[in-house]
Amino acid sequence: MQNNQFIKAMQFRFACKVFDTNKKISDCEFETILESARLSPSSFGLEPTRYIVVRTTFMREKIRAFCWNQPQITEASHLVILTSKIADLYPQTAYTTAQIKRKTGKNEEALRLYKDERYGGFLKANNYQDSQNLFNWSVRQAYIAASSMMNMAAFMGIDSCAIEGFEKKELETFLKIDTFNEQIALLLTFGYRKEEPKHPSPRLNIDDLVSYI
Ligand SMILES: Cc1cc2nc3c(=O)[nH]c(=O)nc-3n(C[C@H](O)[C@H](O)[C@H](O)COP(=O)(O)O)c2cc1C
Image (cartoon, rainbow, N blue to C red; front, side, top):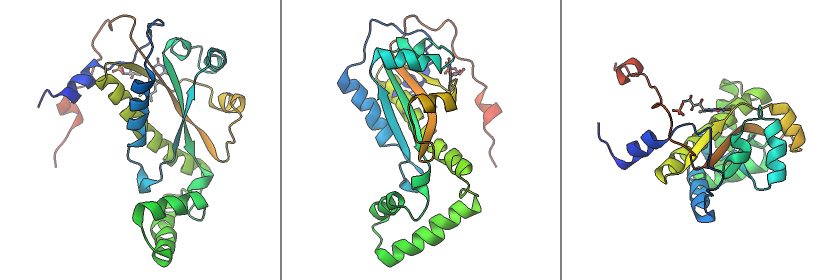
């Protein structure tokens, strides 16, 4: 195995629970983290994830109450809420039509066939016509972007912690999210560690994880 810069960044990353409240990420650095989200892959190129950067202390304090009162929500330099599209992802919508057209460059007839047969068939085969299943699929794309963002942050010497511990319905209601169209996938916090982690993050051995056939 190579010990390259990316591996070093991944070794640097840990789930930061205590952020240094005096250290802030610059706008330019944070834009770089957001760019890593924008460049992340998504199934069918649908880019179904949206990023709400919560900037006010007032909002962050309110949101913390819906997140098991986890201190990272208010103490990290930056808080981002990742939401996942749902209704827009059905084949006939203007959003999906535009995304697939942009991605494939297909003409009207080829586009119609692709949407109805390939994409529509994919949704049908996986039972993604069901909105809960469609959301679960959409969320998976958000996690890919979240991974990019945390790894990019680590590459830049910036710490992070993903937050899945939140009351989803209550937070969506508080944020006035139209849950027919989109729902919250997860939250991400970014900033600088107050102290070094006490132990290295335990990991299974590679032989326990990988098999070759
Ligand atoms: C999707 C996801 C959600 C997580 N949610 C939380 C959370 O709500 N609160 C928290 O303190 N840590 C959270 N974590 C951090 C994990 O507990 C941590 O990544 C895991 O224990 C491995 O440790 P490491 O990241 O330091 O290697 C989350 C991690 C992931 C990937």
